[in-house]
Figure 1 (cartoon, rainbow, N blue to C red):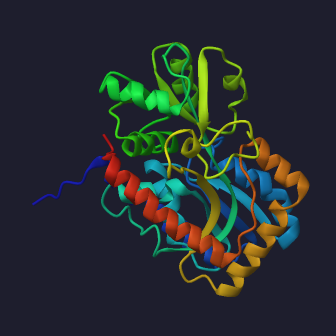
Figure 2 (figure 1 turned 90 degrees about the vertical axis):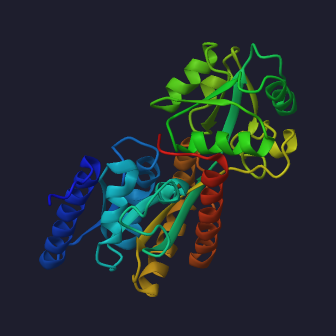
Length: 325
């Protein structure tokens, strides 16, 4: 009997096989290059913080760190590549909170997001900003929630795509506020935001990076930020918790993960080097321009953040009923 394998699954298996062979070849060659794997296409949000620290990390560690994009399957191909790499500290994955989402939404994607990795170093965190169309009869979050409850299923919200951070953040808000909004996914954050400013969409949550022009757009009303405290990048904006939704917090970390089994001394060394780099004023400024707030976290601290965020992401996906379709 011929077995039937889903085409997408077959492509993923093939890609992982090629990745495994490449890893073996690299191990045999003993080359001197260390890599930060970005599991998405060039130019995306995961690549930018890696680029921001690359040169200084090379100097701090005396190694040649390169950025290697391995996109596909919602980040699963590049992430699985790192999970299967030798645990020698020379192949890391540039991860974020969405590291857990692929696993939370379905069967194990050829790796366990916790058991197959070791948290190495935190680069920083990013918060998000809630905008609504200015034509809505609302001036703050409490108004928006009341208006949504008075019109269940009538209002919509846009996102940068299914299971994107902008989708998760808004789905979490919808669930926390017990309101009924229709989700409309787009291919990117700019498209989603422009649709709201154009009057077709009603609400959108955007990363702090790049929100400047939208803060000046009279067709949009800014409601607040999703962080636990007011963002130092946008101190004039209230948090959504203080604006009418107590307990609501949504932030995304950016950090480096290594394959499970990487020696503790190696992990500690990389952690120390990354912390040294991100606390340099010029690097911190570079990251701030990307909307990323830097903060020192040792290995233990990053591990606690990593595990706590895993619980939050799984809970958001489950409670919000987010699926791949």
